[in-house]
Amino acid sequence: MAIEHDFFGLLSSGPDGSIFWSETVEFGDHALTVDLTAPDQEDVSSESLDIAAAFVSGLEAIDDKARRGMLAEVDDRASEVTEYILQQQEEYGDELTDYLVDVSGDAAVDIIRSLRLMSMTLLVDEHGGSEPFAVLEYALDADGDDDVLLVNFGSDGSVLSVMSAD
Image 1: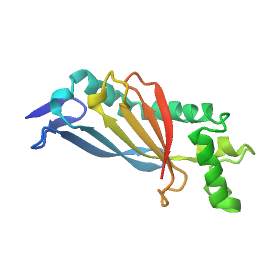
Image 2: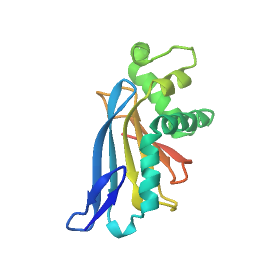
Image 3: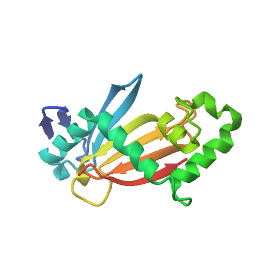
């Protein structure tokens, strides 16, 4: 079976009923991978695909919202964003400024501004649920993708959480 959508085209299901779509899109001065997935085609609605298409089409606004979500956690010393920032400062030391797009003197803000959006995964079967609908992956060093921050969005476009992954 397959689902057809104006934005994503024909989404064929695998033998297990899952669907997967992947595309490389230009974002700013680099390309990033956008993946759409669902373990069961039966859990995918046209509304969830429309929302996913809006996420891809509005990537700049979603990125801005993700960065504001990260900044909102900077004041919490126990947040994963703060831990990530401290880890990057320790790992890069004096070379950190080589990775920053702007040096304002506020390391947390500078690091968050300088993070590169690496990928976006759309989990279209999670429409309206409490689990993430979209996951954006950010890294300071595109070549050293060991340390990343993941920003989880609900299908309503709200930031659910920010987590570090290494």
